[in-house]
Image 1: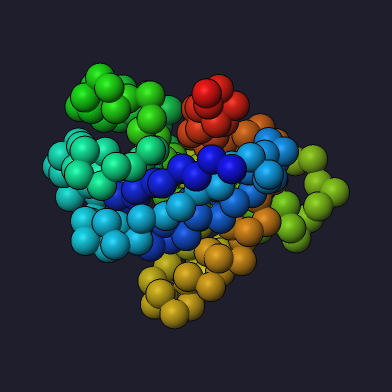
Image 2: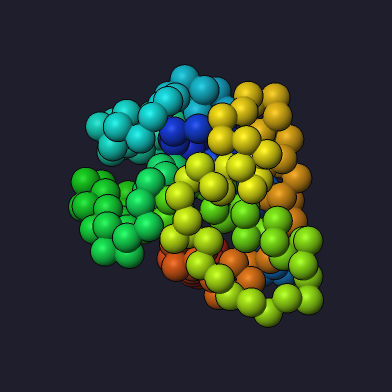
Length: 201
């Protein structure tokens, strides 16, 4: 079995939890349970922590390099909320951040940048769980961050004690096809990771 050691650098714990559960489900989705597993470098990730998007922007290229060179990571994830619903801003941010990376790290570094915030991806899953037969395709990412957090957590500002178990719950129930059909930012992230995994030597 191939073990991929991964590092994560991002602005909050909700994104880290989402990522961990996403990777577990991705292996199953790609029918690679007997071939592949991910190993989270917890020590690295808790050493290199950011608390806001500005910190991620300022340090991510350096932290990614540290992960690959000094910690022998096989793959790296950078998490950052976009905090806007503008599609053009999303594309510009992805391009800008990719251009900051060393060429030899670009193909194995994945930018997890939800349009608006990670709660919007989770909000889609909450809707799917609560209304499984609905085919309505409403863009939740056009709605403000505050609205997404209220829908998910019951309040715009809640403690991690309240929010993180909810993140854990819904990030374990991911429907990749459903999310891809509704979120451009998830589709971009998911397709890049999926392509990398499928084409591993």
